[in-house]
Image (tube, rainbow, N blue to C red):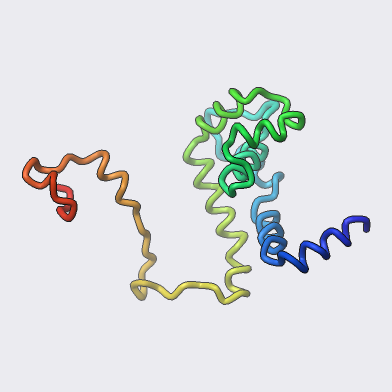
Length: 157
């Protein structure tokens, strides 16, 4: 194949990059992303802009390949048939059920790979599935007592 030499060069000089590309391609195939969207979306619809395209554009920004979603769109706008406003509207209106299904699907697909690599973390609390919540959201939604507002170590009520 024509690309074998290019692939060999990447594998030689940047094997982790090649591995990550392979894992992401396996974990997030476009056909499965679109199928998940069709199964779980209740209000959004699929027309000219596929959900897999949104995930791909967002991935370029998240992984630092492009500086922003807008820059990622600009770099591939000839392949996308909709405006940047439509892209942002679709991203902004993504329903939680679709995101949950996507995370569940990726976790299911990567579970055997994690097991083969023996990369499971030991349980923090044996016998329990532990979930860690980000406390930053609470700071914006709860109000501290007046007396404790200047203290950073005080808990929220």
